[in-house]
Length: 103
Image (cartoon, rainbow, N blue to C red; front, side, top):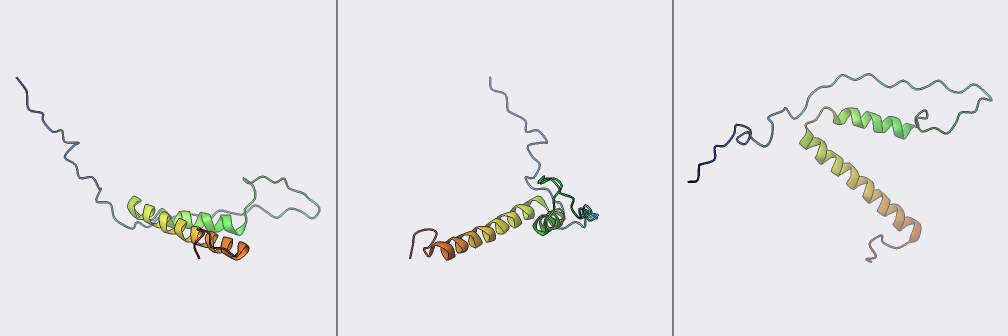
């Protein structure tokens, strides 16, 4: 005899949470390490160097924390698309041919 299968409460939960789309997050700015003294040479360690691109990337990461997981995924895809377009444009400018080989 086959017994009917009961659905657990876990299986009946909605797939998406009802989390708010935007949540304010308090964050403290990262402090920059002091400039080296004249004549002092610092090692080339990426953990201790911060250029303006790294600082900008950190600020974008802080902004992303304010959004839901679904919105974060969309924003990350859009950011990567913009970077890919810029890379293709740089390739075309450098080599004079379209990146995908089309004219």
